[in-house]
Image (tube, rainbow, N blue to C red; front, side):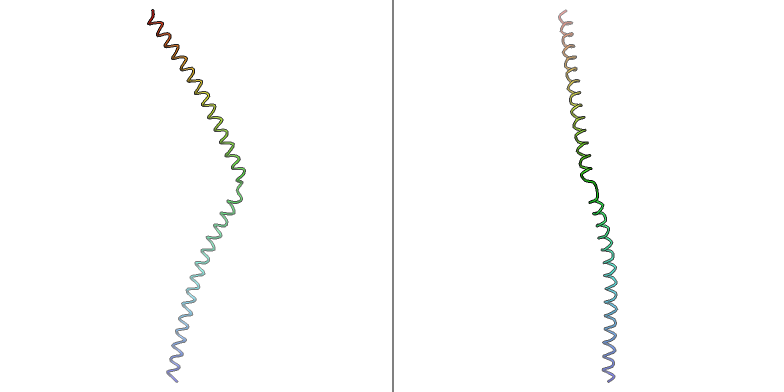
Length: 104
């Protein structure tokens, strides 16, 4: 009888220890779960903000800016061509003056 009692007490102690270990593991899992939930909530909040942004308006602004830059580029090209033509005229005039001086 005492041997059976000792076996029962030993088994109960083992069950109690197993239950405590299971409780500890469960608490650790709960901590991890709360951490993951916080990460998921944070990501969902960022996604929600991303979705609420006015993408059509932004795209329209970017398109307008690109068109404005292209217009400015074309104006610069036209100015550069004008300066180039004037420079060529000055060079031609200089060459003609130089030839006149040589001829004299």
